Length: 143
Image 1 (cartoon, rainbow, N blue to C red):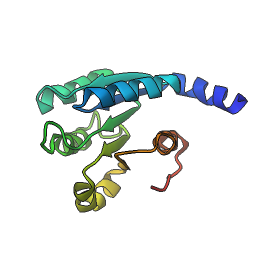
Image 2: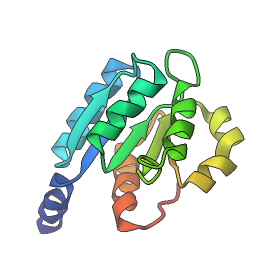
Image 3: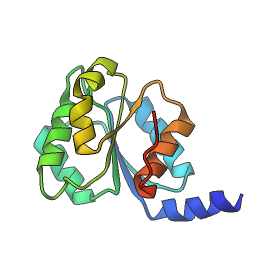
Image 4: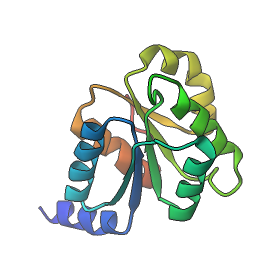
């Protein structure tokens, strides 16, 4: 139990920004991550890419959890590319949480180069939390 409390104390200082166009998933992430002690911001990505980038720049999260398919388009992937090309946001760690298996397979080399972790939906909660912990532990967590 002591380890869990210590982990929660560390998590308290971390801010996770979740971008997904499904309200139920945003609610799930908020509940799950706040329970783990993280500060959580969620966004349904209902704005243009540049405005979304501005929101992330303003919030400066410690981690971004991003879906690739937004409103039936690959806007999440487009946004990730913008994020990684912008000097102000390039260093923000990203975990892609997506059901787009084929897209992930096609982009795997690019994702590896960008240092982006992937959690495929439907996901196991413990696996997701391990990926998030791995961002700050510096440890690679196998899929």
